[in-house]
Each structure stands twice: as C-alpha cells, then as structure tokens.
Length: 483
Image 1: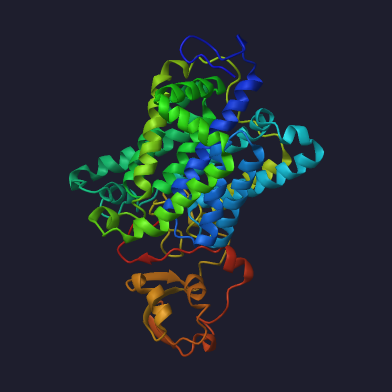
Image 2: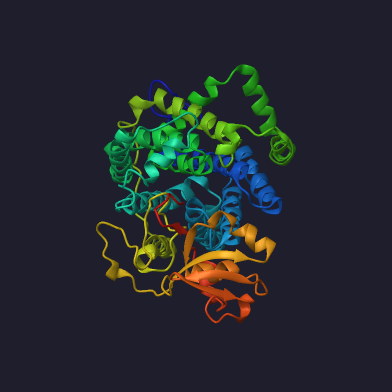
C-alpha cells in the first residue's frame, strides 16, 4: 500500500484505499506500539529473566512483523502469563493487559477454529478487537480518575499529585501551589476518558494523554506510560495512522531506512540480535553502572529515555498530521462491542475496578496513586458510601509488625515498620514463613506468634481465592501516597 501523507486519502496502486486496507495498517500500528510498550515495560520490570526473555523476544518479533495476528496474540498471551505470575499484586497496567489478553487470546483461538481466514486477516481482526480495547482503556482511565475523589487526594500534605511531580528530579512544588496541582490532576484525569468517548474531542484527549504520560515517565513510571501511549492510536482514524506511517518513514535518513529494510528482510536474525542486545543491556551493562541521583530516585531509569524517545517521535508524527485528525475520511472509532466473550472481559474489568469499594482488595484495582482508603474505619471516598462494602476480607483488625526473628521475613517487611496492614494482608505476608516468631500489634494490643503457624489469629491461612486475588496495600497513620 502506498499512502499519500500530504494531499489526500490513502491510495492503493493509484486508487482510493478501501477502509479495509487502512484497518490493516491500523492493526500494524497498534501492534507495533504495544510491542514498544512491552519492551519499555520489561526494561523496568523486576520479573525474573525466565519471564522477561520470552516477552522481549515476542515483542521484537511483533516489531519485525507487526501485521501478524499470531505474533500479537502470542505477545498478549505472554503478558497475561506475567500478570498471573504476579498475582495477587500485579501493577494496574498489568491487570488491564492480563484481563484483556486472556479474553482476546481465548476469543482468537475460537475464531481460528471457526473462521481461520478471518483470524489471520489483520484488517478484519482490527475491526473486531479495537472496540473492546478502546472500552477497556476508557474504563481503566475513568475508574483511576474517580478513585481520586477522596479526602486523602485533596489533602495538600499527603496527596499523590504533589508526590508524583516531586519524583521528577529537580522538581519541587511550592506548598501554595498544591491545591492547584490537585485540582489540575483531577480535572485532567476526568477529562481524558470523557473526551475519548466522542469523535470530535478525541484529539484533545490524545494531547492531554501525551502530557500526562510524559510527566508519568519522567516521574519514574515509564512502564505504565509506554503501554498507555499504545492505546491512544486506537482512537485515531485508520487513514490518519496510515499517513503517520508514511511520515515516520520519510523522517528517517536514507541509510536508516535501508538498515530497517535489511533488518525486516532477515527477521529471525534481527529478532535474535535485538533480543540479545536488550538482555545484555538489561542484565549486564546497566546494573554495572554507578548509581546516580536519577537512577536512585527512579524505579527503572533505564526505561525512561526509551519511553520519552518513543513518545517524542510518535508525538511529532501526530503533530505533523494534526490537521487530519478531525476530518479524516472513513469510519469513526467505534465503541460497540459485539462478542459475548468480550462482554465478559468488560464485566471482569468493571468488577476489578469496584473491588476496593466492595471490600475485596485495595491495590491492583485501577486506583493508582489515588490516596484511596476503603479499609474499615478509614473510608475516605467523597461520593461512595462505606455501606457498599459487602466483603469482610478487609475486616478483622489492624496489624503492625514489631519484631521478627526470620531474616528473610524481616527484610521483606523492613520498609513497612511504621505502616499497618489489614489482618488478611498480614496473614498473606507471613503465610510462607510458618516457623517464624513474630511480635506484632492487633488493634494496638501487642501479641506474639511463636511460631506463626501456632497463632490462631495471624497464622490462620488465607483461602485460595484470597491468596491469588486479595492484593492489600499497607498504610501509615499520617497518610502516604501508595500505588
């Protein structure tokens, strides 16, 4: 396909390109962007190499051939496995990708049996899966914004809004500006999912999203920004994405384009070389570098330049095409999900987003850096009443650890010495150390579990469902920003 990036709609062999052709390009653009997000994520991830290596290889395989449905489904499947292995405490973006990946993987395998030609057609697949991906992204954004409507987030002393900005090196927020930062953060996060709902306002959502994810990456959360930025391409008309491919190619020097063409022509070798270079940098070069203030303050500073470079280049491409965003021909980005399996995915996303209010868990629930508290006695949401909590998982009391005789367990909770956990969270933390002796307080009353397995309170084992799903966050007396 040849796309005229400057003077009109896409053309195929001199004729106007059918919507189907542009949908195929849109599939490739999203697959490429998602693979870049996966590489950025793995550069910052602390997962074992046995998990990171397959994800990286699959991501580079997608980069080499982004039009391949098989490769995209394989990448989503590996990201789902990574999410499952992190249960009950995956990060919020991993939870989103895990639910979506499990759904699309199951749906695609059924489609492969029923209609193999459709399952291998990137254009046909894009038309079917893009609505679900858009809805899933909007749900995640909307609940993340809604969770911030609580008394903790609007507290200038404890708010995550200021903490995030001050995580950027050399940035310090004056106390007098804290209310403005809080109001601006809430307004932006409520605006993005709202603007994504409507065709004419989506360009503004993408601009706001770009600013948000750049700030997030600078603050050390590039693995979230890398994946998040990939989803915005789903809201652009396929014709715009096709033009964007041409603009991006023309922006590369001739020698770089020749090198890229040669790399694509030698797919397996390219995947091997790129994956090997990534692993050498990830596990060899970067850990050997001397620590700096920037590295020490960031979770994975090595992924920040990669994320910002990727967002900067693609942002420049979109800026070049800004005049085409609202007026591009072709079908609009639909939010109509038709498959029953995909509706199960939406239900799972909604349920996961509601779990803090239902009393099931307090993290990995699209409440990222919101200051939200839903534990008994600490409820702080401004609009959702505490009476909606129907589960008793967060009940049973407040635990604070005082002294542990097991060195491994002591190291595990060393950063939580001044913090508290609901009883279930404490039980889950010590469950793998049944022979340890632990001195702790329960609701302020000191107790000793000697050993843990003999204590009827702290040693009571969590259920299988709790063990794999009850992600519970520690909290401090004064209120602190927690993921």
